[in-house]
Image 1 (cartoon, one colour):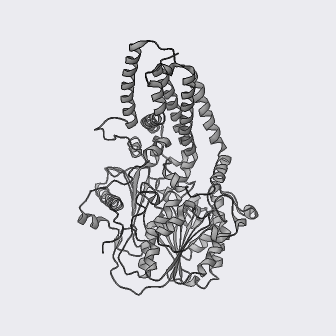
Image 2 (cartoon, one colour):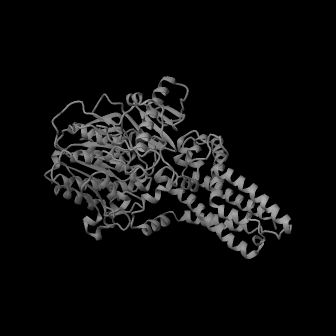
Image 3 (cartoon, rainbow, N blue to C red):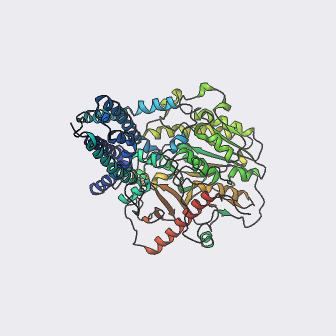
Length: 638
């Protein structure tokens, strides 16, 4: 028997303990994604995580805390305690469930889940199918969650509230004082301190102070905290590192063609392949496994031999809904997904919008049910005038039952649909099949061998589907006068150490293929990124108007060759052979890629000239990106 305050403290301590268990399990389920971890660093992370856990636990249990501290005698009644115990169990079971889900879901997004997930999947029509496959494939996560709840309930029932110790005015006065003091301490715990503390109130990005590598930030955090702190949170903070004049000399998203050239009326087909990573493609990785690595994409290997291939190409995205804005609008998703932020209604330029001014017909295809990932709405915002989805395919017999029409059937259909477009045209397709649960068509299942990770077998099938697409496209009248761009949306699963670093986790292919050999085939080892696709295509075709794009023209040798992405609440800039990781205030890491490809030797403070140069560039990008987002200045002032 204990006092109400004693019972409350005891039960909150149980939940804190279970959050610590969840943090350990989160790491154990994803050990391969956190290279360089040692015991001392892990202990620092565990201690730092307690701040985030305390804040989350207090938020989740606010009603229960109030129910136990209100200074009225009915709180001692058994029936009252039974009711509030249900509140305690249910709310904390939800918090534990969110943590458990990220044991697995983190592998696909490389970050703790935030409220953006509701926007990402709000248009899906197959919630039950997705949930069924998740629980069938990862049933052990459900078992772990149930065990955590059993432990919570079992330990909680070991204490009960005692009868009131005092009566009359003494009871109410004491209870009121305890309530007031507890309320103050709860507020401090919720905000994790008091001003003018630098990290007050506590934000997800503050986890960086307990880590060495940005990837490790996710271990410090917990999922309930990240979800609660991103509700109605202003994503982008304006920065004023430089004056406007100085800023434009450091980095500018305004592209002004310097000469009027004859416009090439070539068709453009952009193929975004779900989860296609560089690691899966043998052409990119001849050095792996002592030179014996074959990869899982024989067709793409053969196509790469006839293409311009960027060997050091990177994604600007971590999840599917971020890829289309990056590739087709040259907008990276730094911090949160652009289409899910307050700024998605900003006036923008896009590849489709610019080419429409040159008479192009434009189309976007995605074999999922119309509305999936909000891509039909994205197509409208991007100025695309035709959407081709599962509805337009109009044959439910070819539906995989989870994500959409099988790729090996939808991609040839897309090739034929392109023939219905007036030339010149811009058409983009986003594939669906190489996605968890990595299903294959029954009639083809035995055709593709397993790999060390399930995604690799699925990418064998994606490669087969691309072969089918190009075979069909080669029969169409528009084929020889077309630029094909092939990339992946993001990475899903990593096996080799080179792809487990914070840099390798963004490694996607970038391939330009022209059947008419207008663009010569070669390997280009300079840095490239998804957001470079739009300016590269526009400038190659001879687009003569000023436009806005965060990427650079890959064919312009005067441009700095860089890539920007966001990992673990940290901006990561790749420039030539250097990588900098910056949290918008301080530089956390600097790496020499040429001599340290696994990013093990942090050179912060050891090469001032390179560090200052990199800091200047990354801060210029942050300022341009954030300020233009907030100010709705994402088109040129003409």
